[in-house]
Image 1 (cartoon, rainbow, N blue to C red):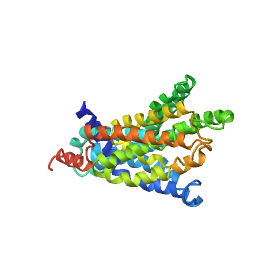
Image 2 (cartoon, one colour):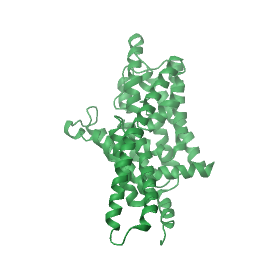
Image 3 (cartoon, rainbow, N blue to C red):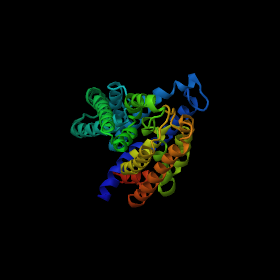
Length: 352
């Protein structure tokens, strides 16, 4: 079990970790320049949408393809990822992590069939056309299948959240919200389901817990602290900067790659979400509106007068629970450093 978790975690880490710098760049641009950011700038904020919808998924798709089949795999992975982007209206990080490796694997198998029989002098021509033709096929398949599949997952998550709330099992919403956030479905879930429910609930009491279910910065803070204390390599080194962007800047997306790189850490997010949500249900806490962005400063601004203890205690409990569970998981299932993985990959290449 431990080896399987590390193997899958290492594979996902190889797609995500090399691109952490790009995520941090996007997070800083978002934190500074969006309308509710530190230094709003309409012109610079125009970068936010294209970067999260195009640049970051394509980088992940390219990296995933490269892990499977080198540069050629990376190229076809990026091409296929474009199909997932066009095939859906939500950020396609999940689609990229599916389309990139699968497309590269398909190209690898195709090359194994045709390359032994390529006439001398025609290698470059045939290799380029085989990649291009297969790239078209994989892009169309990604557009028709993978992109819509991710959209279906997003809609299903929203329906389950609504169902749990209707059954008055609100703390269990964490089991849906946290994985949806990590797959970058957070905005669709928040805007499409939680914000309307919160607006309706706030009409009677002046506050609503729904505004905190997705925006709570506590679990993410605990996760990043766990990586800072017990992590390894680039993830450990990137955690302090990510904490500032996440907790003070309110850009939660910055910690999502830390979970994608080591999927077992979603358990820490469950623990943080359950702890915070249970406390808020018991105390009847809520916010007056959706905090945007989800920073601790926005939380303070949206907390009703006289409710700061209840709200902030929930954030603290979420942080403690996420950190404690994350610390134990990182000690029991340590992150495989990306540098070690790259060396192992090179060892499997003939002639190296």
